[in-house]
Amino acid sequence: MPTAKKGDTVLLTYIVKTADGTVVGKTEDDTPVPVTIGNAEIFPEVEAALDGLEVGKESAAVVSSGNAFGPRREEMVIDIPRAQLPGDLTPQPGMTLGAQQPDGSTQQLTITKVGEESVTVDGNHPLAGEDLHFGLTLVDIQTAA
Image (tube, rainbow, N blue to C red; front, side, top):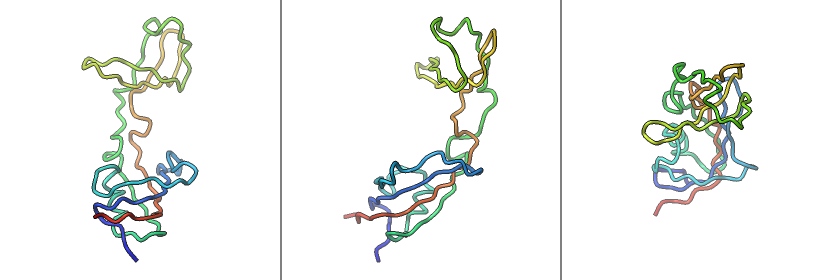
């Protein structure tokens, strides 16, 4: 039976969990997604888990936080005076705001706490500091030419 190798486009289903078992991603409706092994379309640890896998087989991979969304950085949690928020905004925990950075890019901030005078926002990616645990099932292989 053929096995997946670098250059192959494979169809796979996956589920991604944090270390405590919380599901943070999965294939929608178990519809396989295509990935070309070796094209850096996914984490290298996942590519390595697919390499040599046969159709219908399952594999697992762990991507450390340092290789995923980085460590959680407490300096990215800040308080913003409510006076600096748009006047028509009623801030709620979980709401996201876009903040213009000096280089022109936009950083997403998540409101974590709302106070009388200020709101606390977190600029960390929601999965920062989390190791990601992938459960993978290889559905099909399209062999490289």
